[in-house]
Amino acid sequence: MIQVSVCGPRDATPQELSQAREVGRLVAERGAALICGGYGGVMEAAAEGAASASGLVIGILSQPTRDGANPYLTLAIPTGIGEARNAIIALAGDAVIVIGGSWATLSELALARRRGKTVVQLGGWRITDADGNPVEGVAYAETPEEAIAKAALF
Image (cartoon, rainbow, N blue to C red):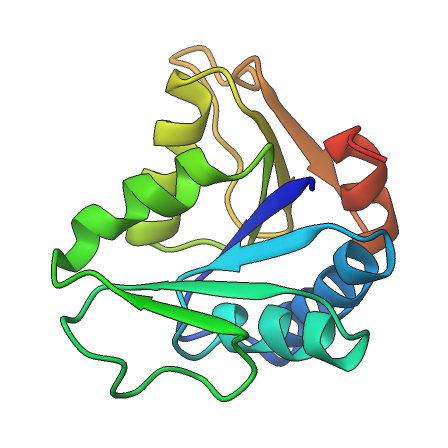
């Protein structure tokens, strides 16, 4: 089964939440599993979208219990390792779709790229080098459909 990690901020904009729901739905409709951080914001919206299409949704939780996990998860995996769980999320997906931007989200993007994963950024931050040029390896999308297409898994 294909696995797609979806990352994004807990404090997301209404547009980011809408995009995350649609990405989650599209992932599930293609028969892939969705992996996320398991809490609120983009994580919950993506999980909700995938659950609405009867998808498999796995939440990798930072806390040692399932307390606070969003209700759309098929499986909630408590780790107790705090933000180190970002590495699990970033590396578990065959591709990573990043929606919006936050420091934690940026760490997931960086870990995924370092491991050679396909990373698609939908909205949010643009990563550039010292000369202002886009950094290689991050594809940018304007819509959820484009993000799924650029993930190149389906």
